[in-house]
Length: 139
Image (cartoon, rainbow, N blue to C red; front, side, top):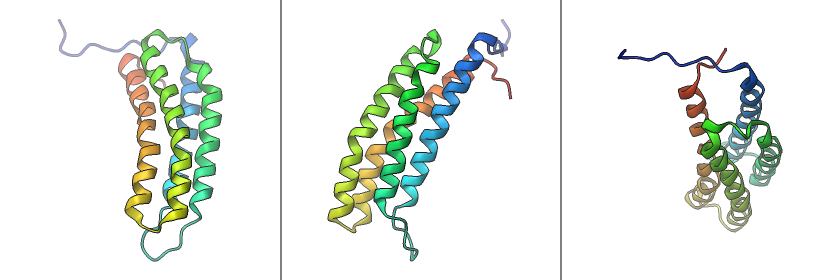
């Protein structure tokens, strides 16, 4: 038995699903970064948190609409379900971020609310690892 087995290449029929997954991941990451950029750090006055919340809400809606594009990949069924749940959980937490931002200037409280929203979205990184662990992905 070889020490390292070669992964099979990504089947051609899964290439569109891989691209759909990438679209979801990229829009989620852009929304996360935008929300995080609104947190007050240092002496620079950041953009209003509401803009970050709106950007992430839009990203979550877009990604949710594209999730069907990478459904029905047997090796990723659990990851797909986890990502759908993560979108729902993040969307549910956005209202709390808005409320906390309106009620306090304490970075720790706001950071906690933001973390509660973005942490579930790590499911997309987990799904990407499954893609890459299962197949050799073309560049």
